[in-house]
Length: 263
Ligand code: PAF
Image (cartoon, rainbow, N blue to C red):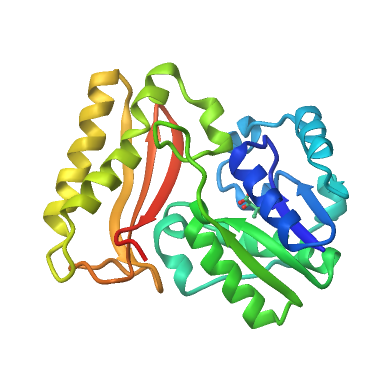
């Protein structure tokens, strides 16, 4: 079985996961569950997009065997006494900005893995740090699942597909492709062994310049060149260096990442 865990409001990124799961598995199950444990901010949870009818219709048309849409009490019966406490790689990036986020992800994903049993599980590379945390989770808890990481799907203008894109204002939507434009600019300047700081500074200008032009407010939480292995920031470009960004546009927080050098 192939399990594709999602929080719904499905887009072509999710459908890419489903296609890959169909290619590699006999039967595909998609779970749709907006997991309250992984939101460190109640307002963010409340406004997270939900569109279960459209999601179910699209998945049915794709021929998935099952869509699993549990209620909160099904997954996290109250009162909750236990959760998985993550550490290590979660000190950086998303974990640093969203306290408790990865504990919530690891906890819900574990419950979904237990429900699924022996299976292949599919996650998108856009949430790169999440894929690293889940790889550790599978290894440390011996879950009988095999993870498949699927490349990020992008809009034509480079914006990474995300359920949160639906929340962007028009100005923010026109400014946000600068995240990928900045990656491309950074890639064209990066040379193995050379310093990352000046390249990152020019990438920041791309992001802030485009936001100013579009009339969108942008706040960059982090823009880093870091190891694809342990996510430690790199002063110099190395073969496995990736660019990582998290930025809020008019209050909608987006993340993205790419490998700096082609494999
Ligand atoms: O990436 C997501 O959509 C969520 O973090 C996941 C993996 C479905 C867990 O709730």
